Picture (tube, each protein chain N blue to C red):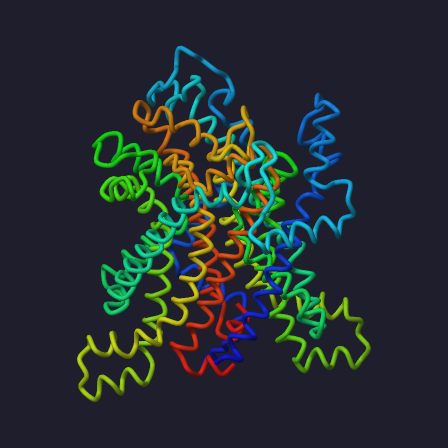
Length: 314
Length: 289
């Protein structure tokens, strides 16, 4: 087990390093002279010099990369080009919003997705199963920001049930925090529910056809115990893979949901930085998001071993 | 006495028989055909000029003049939806081509050569897969400038690992086949082996991946245009139409509903056809799909 973890950790380090190269290389892609592109043609020579120093453009490439990487390893992702505010701090100010959103949406997707998937699989071919298949296809194809707009229009604006924009910190009242997150979380979770339900259904349907399930039924075990205790555990392995993918998807899609509901999270920070072409801010956000995704994937990989001891050997 | 001779069904006929049985997929293939046709003919079939503003018609509900209503500048929604199909299909094609052109050759190389080339290329693919696609596309747009071309090249790059995996997997399996060994032993050059044996064998998984990537890219074009980073005004895109609609949703709900339904239907069509192709591949080829 320890050797597996060590091997996976080594892969993870290589992966993050490759991504760091890609993220750093963004600066190199800026067409023409970066200072002109970023500041416009009317920049004063002082502004140009200041920017060249702050981006370290006069230093050799490897040195710039090394400085950025060693800073990043110590939690210093540079400073914003517009506000000279530290990138790490800007991310820290906003990460709570995004984490609340993504974690709530993940929990909702997993719980609802599993329940729907299992109910559909045990009555394969029934009306609920067919409804699930159709619903999950629609859920996967639906743009989540559109769902958000529809929810805002019909549930928020017309019925006035939930606030449709902004964020309340949990410290200022848990009820308010939940109310503000309600519509965004539903919006973000919809696609995840669809993907997990579809995978859970497909995987459980396959498992229920296996011999050990027939043996269990022949022994006289109740259907509940066959599904709950035996089949589900085997069926979970591909579902866990999909859950791992969901973290990456939810993290990316939260950008759109934050835009629809005016939530001040990492996503809105990213959108604003793209409009301002605030490169250090963008590099920091992308690197952070990737590290989160990679770490989650590692946890997913390790969980296979727990679910299926055979997989741990390979 | 008559003798009944049954010829064995060709692989393609078997595929067609299984595909046609999935009625929803056939309908969705029709939807794709109509979308492509609309995209090709868009400038000639819009009922009104999609960019003509008529302030008297601001937020006009659906009527005989504006079949699907008018937006906040009095522009005809039906015409804008039709012309936006062009941007949508173009964006999907561009991203898918970029993805295919990067993923396919590298995947074939990795699977065929194995060894260190495979290790290096696979690691690079893993790294690319780890970056959330929307964030990557946004970063590229920030650097290269706003616009749908830059955005879709970015989406193509970030989805290339999907084609890489398909191509690598197929190449890994096929290189062990006896007929490849036979071809090699009679001195057939590698390029010719790849062209005549490897590529035909991967047609169905490729078609699946192309269809799914089209749907994916169209969803991302809409998302980026919704954020204001894709198709730029005054050009119409379903995503940018949705972005404008937010401020008038209460007065003009059709502005919110219609572009979203268009995106949903198109993405659903590509995904459904992709799934149906995968399910229609015979068992003899399934391990590759």
